[in-house]
Length: 550
Image (cartoon, rainbow, N blue to C red):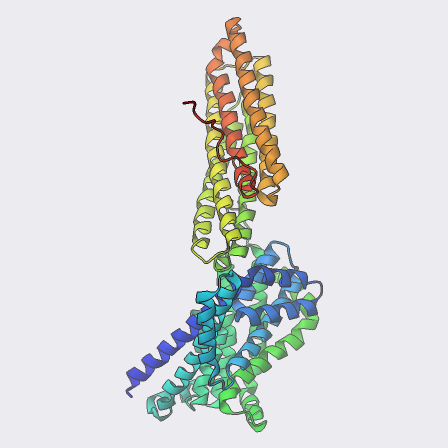
């Protein structure tokens, strides 16, 4: 077998290993995403429970990177403290070592059994969770197959003189060895897969023990990089979590590197076979970090708050901040993040809508110009939420998640339309100011009455969106009917004043009627959030039309 063929076999086997790992992660996330979220949130009362929560979740998803991203999201949302988040990640790092231990066992028949069982479950089961368990089983089978392929493919490398010279040079340059493996772990986004690759190479004799220790340290460092990159735009709290994880790893590596030879010799003297050396170094390193840092996570958190600060900025950028890319493959978490951004979007819409009250009275254009800036932010929220949720819908989702995604898209679309209508109302006010016109006292009072009802309904609609309460949705639709009747009555009042020939009524008639019409249109878009809730509850008639008479 030539060197090129050997290299391609190893690369292909690594790709299979990563694909199997992805199948396991997505299967667990899609089938048990809610349970993972509950485990992490319910067990953060103290550092030891948080540590165990991180360990359990990571053993489920087989990725400390995924756990780190979920944890950073929870920390940013205020669901866990920084101290608890650091404890969770320490547990996640130990969890991934336990997975590595399990996958390094000689389980010759297990991958065939897992593949068969997984295929049958995924194809024949009707329940979503059983199908996802089938996906997990097939993913584990692929990982075990891949590890065996790597071992067989790497066997000829023992005789390669070129490879031996490269490895000897890396062994004499420990920092370079650590950095090379860190880059590989970063590229693959998996310290677990990288450690298993090292274990396979050591099993074939291609990697000597001391170099294996350096490479495992590098894999741990590289595994801490993807969460940092993923949280660069996620806020200071999330960055503190991922930077803290990396800082702990770096400190550990600095301490262990000078003793790599002693570590390798000690493990060999304990009778640990070369093929198991990598996973045992991986476990010992992360257990050491947990023992050292878990008792002082409070001090670690305080230091992170002190040294990891938000860059000074006079202008905080508006726009979505919680649409984490790392959550897209976990729809239940991604949709929760999108829902939070919808609330932020609704805040800007409410600011614009409340500002209409000022715009219809003021004689200055400056306040109106300031309100217009909200429209650009609303459009930004709309585009980014729509794009994010659309990507989430490409994942395999439950019926409940599909309905929630539709509700998010419907509400954001209506909020964006409200922003456009309010912008038109602001234009009416600017025209009124330019022409130096004022509404009659009675007319102004009527507009403010309708405006107040519409603003109150926006608050009601936000509650319906978040709670899904059928009773509140009914109330919102009843308000829609009431507002329509109020707008009709106010329009008739205006027309009566117009027939009476009141001067202020005549000069502002078109503006007055347009304002009443647009406020009713805003309320219609607000009320639209109630329809999906009522439809799911079976509280809507199929049609309001009566049968045509023959």
